[in-house]
Length: 164
Image (cartoon, rainbow, N blue to C red):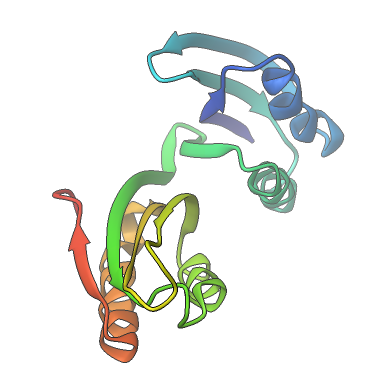
């Protein structure tokens, strides 16, 4: 099977090597690698490779996620297999005190919290948490429903990014 994968890497030494390693380890044969530097310390990388089956692709994706490498698109035999967006949410309330780890774990069941910024003026005051969440385009509605449930349950105010 031919796979075309688009990744976003941090622009630091060794990032490209770490992104290619799971492909090799799980039996992929790399056909081409294109990369270009972007503003913001990121490198856009397109990898084309051949693998024997779907389970090999699943192992490669799992390993890339473990390394916090952002997958933005996968084409399998030229057809869109996976396409992702990054959405931002600001949660305002007692986000830290109401088990932020549990909130992140719930969100990670649908997408991936890829970045988080916290402002906590003092323990008794409300905190603000901005989350960037990488999500498959097909799961955006599910993510929005989940965010609504979390905010209702924990009494958060939510500010959403304009996309999604």
